[in-house]
Image (cartoon, rainbow, N blue to C red; front, side, top):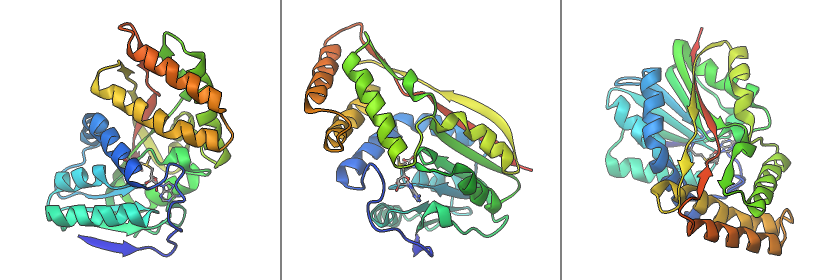
Length: 279
Ligand SMILES: C[S@@+](CC[C@H](N)C(=O)[O-])C[C@H]1O[C@@H](n2cnc3c(N)ncnc32)[C@H](O)[C@@H]1O
């Protein structure tokens, strides 16, 4: 396992959701709840033993580790993130697991440097919603792919299709505030609507679009995903002035009420998985 630093490491914690232990745990739970879907996309893209792959915006690298296990000792995975803290944690984890095929690098994706044609595949999950200019970053990813190499990108689309049932006006206000907080930092929680077009412009043929939409019911493992996110993020929205303290209290009360309602469920934020091939 190697850990390297790219040309332009960012100051620690530029990432909207932070890089502390709580966010690391949230990303771990999120990965566990969606791992089956990730493996399905990787299967569809044909990622397998011996492949040279990129995991861009890898965070603490829960997917990177599984990609490294998938490609095996004869393959290679380059995991890139701007957070030195996340990359350090990934380096230690890969060392513990003896994954010599995994290299973790601190680098901003906007300045990503890849050797042309050096990759069989590239993956980015929950990254593009944070980026103001997806096309420039997709082009950098694609430059590293060999012709016929595959791109797998997974992100949010149609964020306002997220809904708590029975409907909760307080939750709808929270959704609007979350969406606005992303927009203020140049991100877009509907970026998935644009990504297939952006990818098509980058010299790739879009092969498949996979819907990633689920219902979460109180008391199930998936319920932990929105609960962890909203209970962690809503206080930050109050600090940022995007919600009032009273709105936070109404949201928490309505969420807890729904948890006692046997008919309640959440239409989780819909996402899209895109599989494309470099021409
Ligand atoms: C929601 S996390 C997703 C992590 C991982 N892809 C996963 O699926 O668990 C988003 C990650 O993107 C990284 N990120 C956001 N903007 C970035 C940028 N401009 N350059 C490099 N990394 C970035 C953050 O540091 C964070 O680790």
